[in-house]
View (cartoon, rainbow, N blue to C red):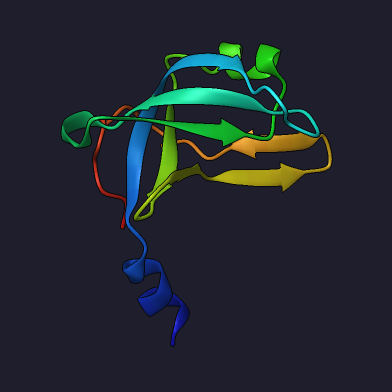
Length: 98
């Protein structure tokens, strides 16, 4: 499968982080974030950042992959730690990413 075909198979959307809380039982830095996904509703998912960093992301839009049972927030792994993938400008929550 070509890379462009593989990406088209993913359900990529823009979501908004609307809340953050501690991720009890996590082995490393991790927080649970609440995501607003527009007409798709809300979802909660872990992200590999400290609770402090997760709380600083509340209100920001992020790019997410929606699976059958879960949602994953896309992150880049820089030398300074994980960085969330965000749209360059505001769009409606739930907007598909192509």
